[in-house]
Length: 152
Image (cartoon, rainbow, N blue to C red):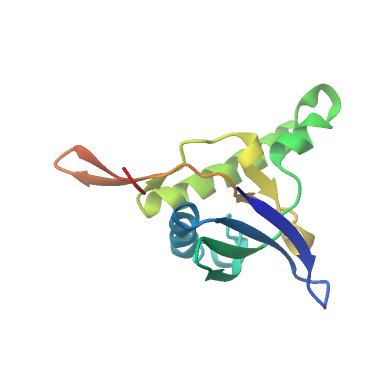
């Protein structure tokens, strides 16, 4: 079960979302977002964690809100395609997000326009990777892939 609440902070500059999920599902995502959040400073391609906490049966995560997904933006365009410059710009930013994950030894496994969104406000031109990541931790050792799983 996942619950997403939108909340607008007092000064209206910070818009956040609150997600609630079971403990084992959320713990992994928090660890990964903490690792990659320092990449590219102001132009980070990952949603920022505002706060987090845990209760007996679940974790909650307060994250900065993002705008519409690339899939939503594409669907309202004429002929459902981006212009050449928009396509190239968003592709470069999506690849930068993937590169940031790879630097820390993770792969995404669910790359599609619905899992990328534009930012809000002053971050409107930044594409963020978000939502349902399905990741594996990859360790290269003697050309063998060892996968770190959340649970067996």
